[in-house]
Length: 303
Image 1 (cartoon, rainbow, N blue to C red):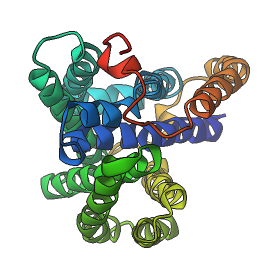
Image 2: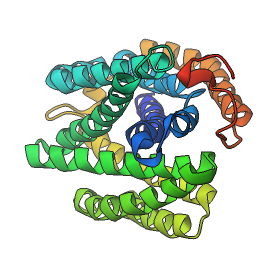
Image 3: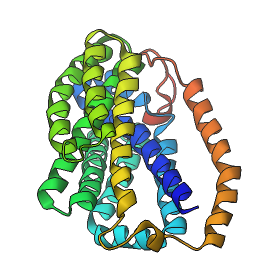
Image 4: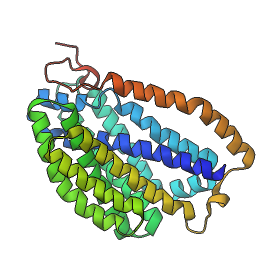
């Protein structure tokens, strides 16, 4: 049960980083790939129907840590109280910006909130997990730079996949530029892990660059998502040995009865969550064009 719930928690964190990763990237890059209000709306509309659902993965991952590994949960969130608080502030600011930008006369402050609220968690989560592994400020800064760069690349590829016209073209150019930063930073950040998933993650980022150059946005997005999955796998393979200094996985876990009850709850609820979110992405699978109504993100009535 202990190993099973560690795998479940790793899966939940992986889902969060894959899905919120492109959310963060889109939020950071919307001002770069957009030249006017309509293009900004088009960019943000790509995440409009899904961004809040993607955050559920974070809530579920943290809740599972609290229930299955309370000592690990307490150690992580007390040690990293300030960065985790800043992550929550960033998510709140981003949510307010996304919801209110179409309801105010001047949306510039909302747009700034979206950029800051996307970049802050993207950097801080990498810093937190790198510090968990290496207990070093330089490693934390490098980890934060890595996740920030990968989120930017992941978001740029997603924008190229989900938009049309000038935004799509600029998103491809931005993705190529972001890969020029993400790949060397990935080499520096992941080489210390030395595991097969870490090496495969670097290769996946290189493949994404080649695919976006060839305008294969769908495959490029699969490659950036694969890089995120492989990186998370490499990190949790290390954390499995020692989730916190001086604490083993068995020592951090709840009792057998608690883990058994959690397993039954997860068996009943998790499939419904996965099916519902998969259905959401299927419904909103088409590219976003500039002529469609503003919808979820901007909040203004259709023209």
